[in-house]
Length: 150
Image (cartoon, rainbow, N blue to C red; front, top):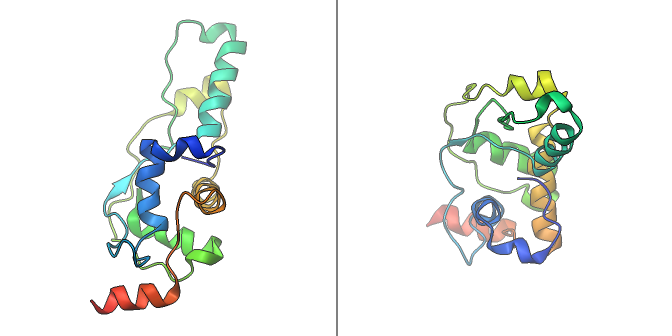
């Protein structure tokens, strides 16, 4: 997850998944946002962990889990997008779900000094980049209202 920098990424799994949030009820795709809960990792955090591991002699031969520990529900994802991306202010609510710590990624923080990008920034940056690159078309308020009535 995180900002998409090139249109060639359009066929990536994360982009395809996240497009479901940005394009929910946009008229062309009347489906609501995806449902469930997920653990997200910002691509910038993965890159920072790789660089830190390469520069840290004690990390040689070690493996690290680079992931936000807490899962987010579809409701939380849509709440963030509605609050931070003006084009998504009318996005339908996602389904509420479990939000708990699922992954222990404390070793990468402790040994490599990784500081995670706030999930709100990750989600916002990804949505804004998809829209800017034309890889996702957000719904208009009218399309969302029509989809809600169907």
